[in-house]
Length: 171
Image 1 (cartoon, rainbow, N blue to C red):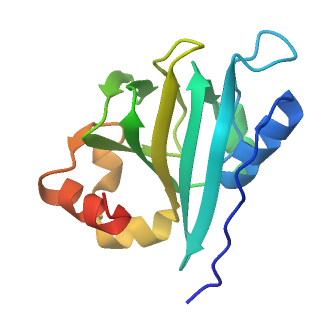
Image 2 (image 1 turned 45 degrees about the vertical axis):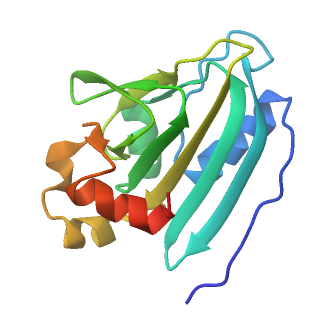
């Protein structure tokens, strides 16, 4: 088993630190900043690596937007998956031409090999929380060969693949 690494709780206020944190944790993305200050804040971000899968707890406030473009994909050639489980607040993402809203009680899988864009639906005073996992593409495609077909599709945690995800995260 891989060694366990936990990132401590910490506040972030500068854009460079936020971009480096998310780029290093998931994949390179654009964050939709309109100034030198993020329109959202992080109150807690924890990371644990378990046998090649990075599991993250992300909590903060405000509306976060992200976009992974074709230029990002060509720049880092990642072909992994990000599993997103909203705990507080909905998120709206677009991938493969479909915009989908996913909220608590559901999860979605995003491919880092395909452009995506979206945001957490919250204003500056509202708290959000989500669990995320970065899963190597080869590992997930071996377990679920058609995983690319369901990219960005919200699925309930109570049935089928959702029940498996729920048990993995002990929700």
